[in-house]
Image 1: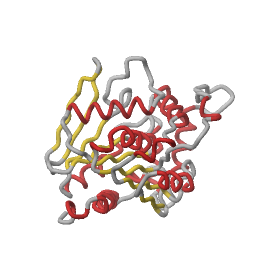
Image 2: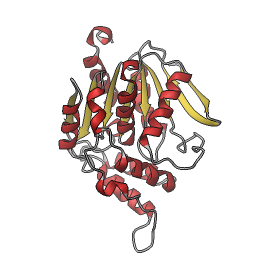
Image 3: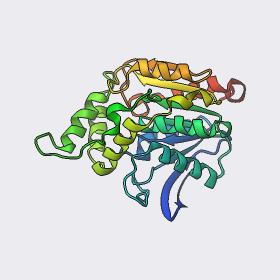
Image 4: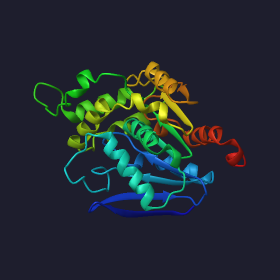
Length: 273
């Protein structure tokens, strides 16, 4: 399997991009808050084996990408624009988008802005927000005084977000990886999550969309995912039993599931895989 990695310069800052596979059809993957492309390592390899070209980015300030010029980003629309720039810079032709959590919101934002340039979108553990922002206008805090440390909150919080079907050792690994985050970046990402609102624009999306939510993901109500799907013409949605907030890391056969989702979007093209 062919793999490569490179740094793409955008506005004087370097963004890290890795690729696997040589297929005609491209899948562009976006990670969760505070994390980076390692989240897709197993899914990347399986999808490449299935014949796709898989592109995985580290968002600015995450993993091996430079920070954004003005520091941690709290605007998911800005991330969406950055991702669209990466797609242009490496000349991807009508990719499929695959994102989770803030990545799920980012790929929906990309679809609002550029659905004619996409083959389809799978948005996991995310929704399009609703109406007024209310409490979302208040920034998230980064203060350990009189509360558990950010490390402890990360460890126990992300452990709880993992589904009941996931082996204990995998849950432990997920939680420990989140403890390695730069919490200034994570908190800004989470503020971006709470403020992001494309509710009124969802109806303009013209490419196929599937929304996926884990049955055990207490952070993303299935009702909101269903309501978001209803706003997007032709969109499908589903609940995955026994899975939490990180399907690509929790499901041992995630690559095959993702292939089935993309195949449903374009059966004539992907039927022979």
